[in-house]
Image 1 (cartoon, rainbow, N blue to C red):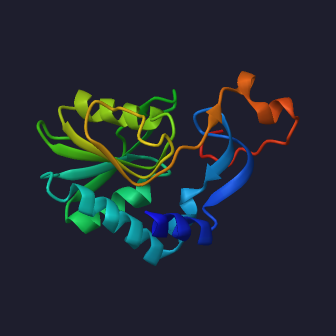
Image 2 (cartoon, rainbow, N blue to C red):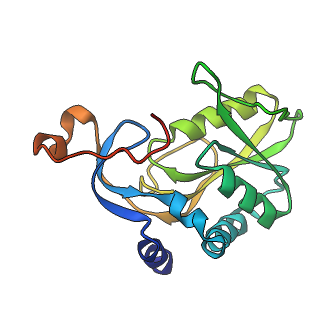
Length: 188
């Protein structure tokens, strides 16, 4: 895992400052995992590690939330030799399947995400799969920011697990010190 942390630092994935996360929480550290996916070798490296974790789970399809998990979903599915799709938000902001994607009854899914902080998007994708008749056999991510504390009720594994403090806006010490905030995430 130390080698993975080194790779993340060398790729400028780990940023320091004052950030508003996609979840709305604030943190002094941000993992810009999209930078991993600008380098096909790094993408392949991390997604192969993730696929190897789940290779014995009899997975039919890999799914992730758009936009951040589209590439990880593709590359992890390629490594596993299975189909991939992605869920995305509709006009009301709800996670759903679009673009003609379908889920067959009993189809076995691995849900993937680049970074898990609160797990909100992952939980929404799990619901999409279950409500469509599929079965979620596992959740995987490149980075687990909770240090292993999150529980999806199904097996969850990550390539890198770190505990990075995050705060509700009202409790954020960085806000109290009036440090400028950046919002590098995918949601507006």
